[in-house]
Image (cartoon, rainbow, N blue to C red; front, side):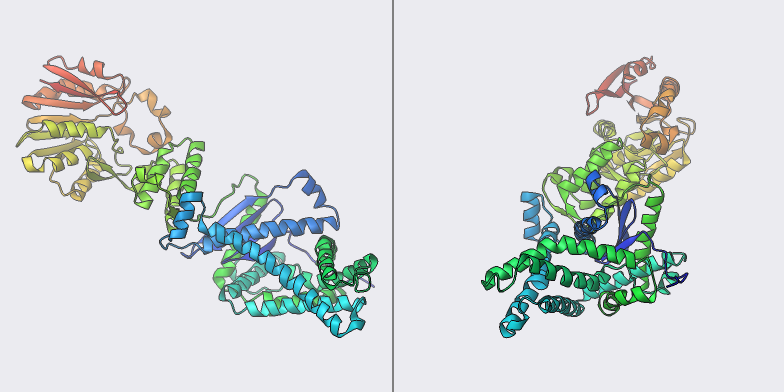
Length: 609
């Protein structure tokens, strides 16, 4: 028979599986699962495939590879379904007593327990429906029709019963809304693969025009498996003498038959896989006869026309596989799901540690998103899906190098909420000591000047804490952007402050009882070696203190006496090992006191004139 040029067809090496609200695609080196979460967003989880040398060899041996692939597909498919359920089934309801108890006592998410139990029950149901039940029915029929026993027709009836039970099962579960949507995603998977095999661009519109029936679908296994099942089981049972004559005990015979089926599953799967693989490469009238039953089952039961957003999900998974197969440097990624607090926080800490980020940032992120104090994070809890997504967004930005508080948008400073962004330095916790010192020293009606105010944190917190003493607070900075940010923070905290844009004292008028300043004090040569989040994001003008870090202190020492009232006080923040050198710049001082920060480092100076 002459071959038609269309007999042999091009097959995509990528195969797939429908999951809950999504599709898994598997390529040569990776697999990717795309799922639409409850918020309507498409989440993708991608993994690099790895096989042991033994499995790698076995997966290339004809007939053996069918069994290997069957087991691998079963394990991988179950895990994928569980992962998709974690995305699709996660909600934001308050965790119940059982969830909280499991999290507290065993560090277990209740969804993991449900998924495990569902998997076990699924395997038990499959064995009961497709092995135990049909064998039981055949045993009953042999009691009515003794002539059936020991003949090939016994196994023909057994095969037909299995198919009938399967079709009935397929028809019944169609009434379950989630299963109907699963079959729609199954259709989306097929349309996407067919679109690619036809050489069309992977778009929703192109995929819609393709058929939802595909001849390499696992559903097509059915007719082939049925045929092989009949032949192999008949031959083996006959050869081993497993029949009513040789084993008259009905119960023993029943379990012997079940045992044989279980043992022969790998053989049947291996032979069926090779036949299916061969048939999938051709598209002539002869092979269509063998494909027809499986294609019919797909059309009637296991696929439905998908919606556009389902095709979008399937295409997303397919493209991710193409991308990862083409470039081995493309990283894996995970779904963002809820889970046990301690486990999720540990994962984030490990990620930060691997990227040179302080682990305390992870604690701050979880505390802020969960609206807890950092000390309360020791109490076990369940992180919801929406909370996990917020955390993930912040974590990704933090891994990009942006400082945490710029990402959050504000921070707490001495009982004030301070908005922060790239216009000014992020207020450091130790600077609260400086602000507190000003508050303790201030008296009724004092005039206070905060130079190099930046975000305005010192001036604002001082004004807020001294609201009952009628003090007048002025805040100055050379940066117009910083002054704008400080004004926003003053409005945010409902305090009245006089703002002046000036290079230190240039445009300052009048004398003050207290002058406080946290000037730039980093040596110019050290700037390139600072942490990435400081070096690349915080304003250099607020960091660079010149060659030795003391440029601003020299200028302050030169002019401060003209702006301090009699008996006034200057308060400064400085860098490590700078205190003595700074004090020596102020020759006309009456006295100078050094104060330490939380780490015991000489950090602050009080200088009287």
